[in-house]
Length: 448
Image (cartoon, rainbow, N blue to C red; front, side, top):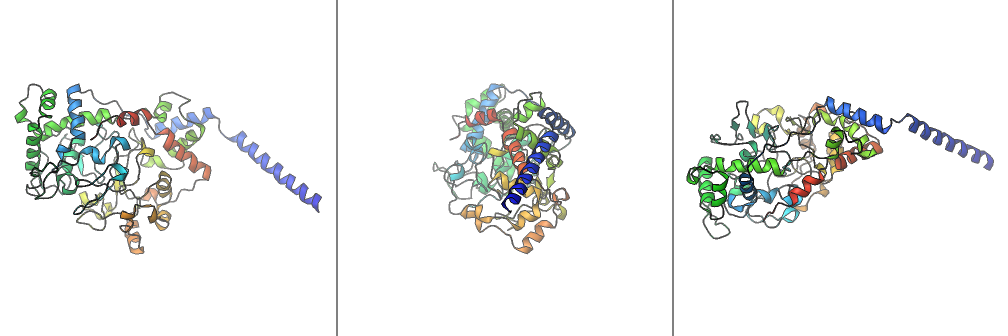
């Protein structure tokens, strides 16, 4: 009996070894994997984005100061860098952001009385100022039209005026008008005790808000010489906020450029740029895992909107509470409900929490959701969220049915990956798409 068992065990071991040897013999070589990945990448138009346009040192200096200046907020307590913190890869590392009136920095930022959480996650800013972008904001609210003009979010009562230089500054022009983002509430005083003149302006008069902010910037002693240097030959008193904010576009295009990931280097001919695991994961990304159906082109984003069935987390938009209708907020089409813009993926491992509302606090969980949204919704772990957000999760059957009613067909069919394949895919996202130089460069930006 013992001899029989020993013989049987030996046979099993030999079979396993034989299978392993066969797998190794049939597995493509590294050279073949590289060739396959480059071919698949070309089919999905994956390529490094073009370099940003040159800008004067003076414009870049003004743009950086504007990005980090709290003067842009009504209460003088919040800057662009508050929610897009250089120390946190241009995010705040929160599921949902906290704007004016908040206390603390990054993941330690706290909500204060009479304030509310932002309905959406603060996206990273890498490559958001490139001309390849045709819309920004999670629902595409700020859009560059074919004639080169810009359309503001649907909730705007006034159009953008002439002089908007780019999408990045178009979004900044939007945020300075929003009470819980940067504007503040009527009757409040700024942190230096001065009146909040921006918050006192009529709710729908964006143009007057911009004019008041332009006056504030032009009259600030530290700003005056920077503005004069950035716009030589132009009378400072004639400069609109739109014109001043053109420096933000120039700065963002340079500061948040990211074209030197290992994947970029592989595409440019460096055969050693990716580890074996990341190489296999890159091929999965571009083929079996189906990622390039949405994450394609130089930005690794298709410029469109998809309902991925992301769990309802947060307070929603004010006029849609407790839901956030996403793209439908702009188009008013029921079929666009819960669809949000495809996120560019460079540096994605460093820019969580993930999804438009920060519903996932690990990259692995976010990727698993993409592979099978229906199952992920049923298994969603709301306890991963910050305690402040746990009560804002809406996961009742009626909520899930509502969410899945417009689920994008591109993600409706589950994709099954082995454990090794999944690990390889994560290796590609973490290793292959991280631009270490860009992250280090951004971290040097001084934000008060």
